[in-house]
Image (cartoon, rainbow, N blue to C red; front, side, top):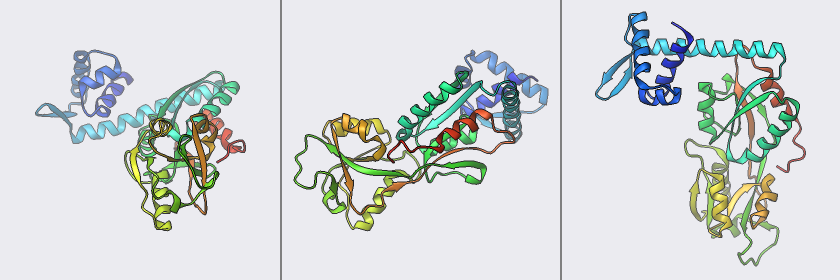
Length: 302
């Protein structure tokens, strides 16, 4: 049995036991993949799947084989990375995850890193924190920049804490305004229609922090829309649909989108942020070097 067969089997399981989807991901046709699966089962003298109607279900033996196969493939990948590091320490691929909020920050750091290590290539995935956590657990990404908290056993991860993110209210320039030109209270926000970012799954993030602050202030916010995509939220409020609670460090970009910033008076509207990556027997130098770039973020107004 060769490594290719192990990869085939792991991909089938990761694609919800769907051979058709696995074949598409592997860029091969379905019949050869089915034949490889049968060959593996014959070699191990065991059934990895049973058919339940139109669905395949993993057997207990298949689950054991999957667990071992994933560990084997991870070990092979670590060996390859370690050898590459020993050779020159400046090659390979970094798989990075980020939430919408950190797109501008990640862009700056990738450009900086590329100027130092031009031999590194990148795979970038943008999603919410809990989805990124799942991708970290499965080994599909190397590290992620996320808002905390996150639904993970953090004892299994290295955590590099970043600056706290502060938030402000951003409103369309076209709106008439009678109050302060720079500040607003929670009470003054109560009747303003809001378009808020919210995680697709799980709790945490700026949405929960904002709702907690509203509760402390004794107000019920006027939420017009919730969305898990930051760019959609920005597009909606730029069109005048509502206002939103967004990170301070994005203020220059948001102002260029025809929006005005109002600091929220007497507010504890902050969110913790961190870079996280899995604890392994060996951490590639590229990950360590990349994380070190985040030690100085003084140029960002969090």
